[in-house]
Amino acid sequence: MNIRVGQGYDVHQFVENRELWLGGIKIECDRGLLGHSDADVLIHAICDALLGAANMRDIGYHFPDTGKEYENIDSKILLKKTIDLIKTKGYSVVNVDSTICAQRPKINPHIEKMQQTLARVMGVDVDCVAIKATTTEHLGFVGREEGMAAYATVLIAKD
Image 1: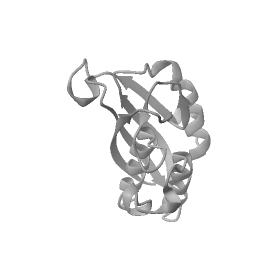
Image 2: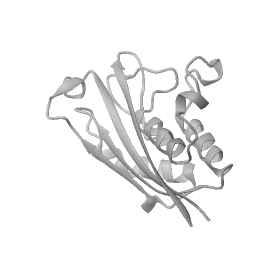
Image 3: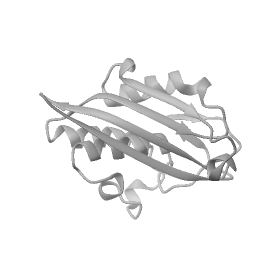
Image 4: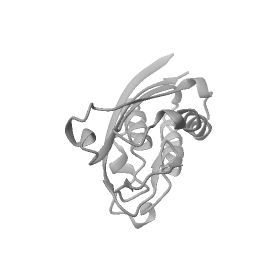
């Protein structure tokens, strides 16, 4: 079995008058994240980790923010396309381990629904999708509530 590890990171700035999408679900919040797509920071980090593990560059290469077809796109579509891309090289997802860095809103109440959503999109068991949440103890741009960050590590395999 050929296995590979990939890591991804993404960050987006908070803005007014925008919905907050995270892990493929809408979360009630007074602000959302700024981005060309729906700015789902968690999915973007996972996509980068998957593409990196398969040595297929990054999310910006495959889904450029200059492309009109990606404007306001649901990031679940980008994740599904990423899964299809790594499949062209014979890879499938073994597991995902991720961390969301946000001072607010509270992420823990939404983790189970995010896991279910991401598992469905990636075609894996929900037990293969780990999501953790942390604050930065009021330090940095996350702590000042200027934005949100996410980290993802993935394991992919080729039979």
